[in-house]
Amino acid sequence: MKQLTFAKRNHQLTNINAWTPDSRWLAFDVRPSGASFTGQTIERVNVESGEIEVLYRAPQGAHVGVVTVNPHAPDRYVFIHGPENPDAAWRYDFHHRRGVVVEGGRATNLDAMDITEPYTPGALRGGSHVHVWSPDGSRLSFTYNDHVLHERCPALDLRNVGVALPFGPVTPPQSHPREYGGSHWCALVSHTTPTPRPGSDDISRAYEEGWVGNQGYLKPDGTRQRWALAFIGDTCDRHGGRVPELFIVDLPEDEAAWKRPGMSPLAGTPTTMPAPPDGVAQRRLTFTHHFSHPGLVNSPRHWVRSDPGGANLAFLMGDANGVAQLWLMSPNGGEPRQLTHGLQGVDSAFNWHPSGRALGFVQGKRIVLCDANSGAITPLTEPLAVPPSADAVVFSPDGRHIAWMQEVEDFRQLFMTPIDD
Image 1 (cartoon, rainbow, N blue to C red):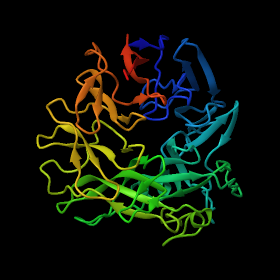
Image 2 (image 1 turned 180 degrees about the vertical axis):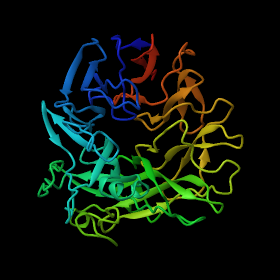
Image 3 (image 1 turned 135 degrees about the horizontal axis):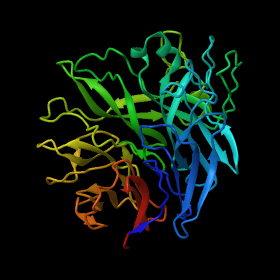
């Protein structure tokens, strides 16, 4: 086990794509905590030498965080950027943030913002969050909150999942001083409603998404669905209770489909959320309302993760005793399979090893490896005096190391340990 950072400040890893493709650097931000968005720099540490480089420093009172690295471009980073010159009317919030890409020291807005009618297709009307590159590095997923509906009624501002595609740039008229252009065409791909019907597939929130497979997944008829995202969607049971279930959206391949409206306007209206484009199909995968402990768990917070081949989606759900365990399920549906068992369960977000043969997470104050077929647990560390952070456990792209965060003298530091072949 090797400690990588030592400065008396917090170092925050994102839950995926934290490593550079060559497995030599870990990117991080310096928020005081995961919930306090007041960091001013995006940085990286060399895992061999301990050298730290500042990749970006926020200007004009803005704050930044939640950085991910393009899996095929070692000098291309994306992160959340808060507003410059924040004031009482426009400060950092879920619906007041954007993605910024830095490459070669040059910063570019990822998503455009247009909050003035008529809204611009391909632009957003609010804030994007946790931008995750697709496995081929060509596009990104994110979660989204809407400024227009937030101003109308905060209860209408429902969390959704979106995609940023390399079909830009998008340049709105910029009639409002807080509007701007972006490099990518952005669209929402989930469909939510503030009033989900009890017992139905309706959802009031879509979140914690993950790309399905390095090349998508195979359908039962043998054809390949090239692009898909799995996510958690909050359903409503017959008694009115919230039950998080597993959902998937199949996404179109061609640029033209992304720019065609589906059932509703792409850019939304003053009273409705931006809508998915033509060819986006949302489907529910789990049906757990009748379980003794229904739904996916939200604690520990986790993101749905697919194995590289796209055959298995991994997520956390309670067992018969309510203990959070890893479960696997095909993107085609069927019955979920419980992978881990026992009293300790899973104590953190998790990720797949690049080989697809195992998953890594925190269990009982240890960093562990879980066999993807048998569920057998291999500890990679001894029980640690301070529990590792539940926010992120991330494998290096070469599969030789795993990194995490842990508090040392009240400051969150970065650690890694090797993985035996």
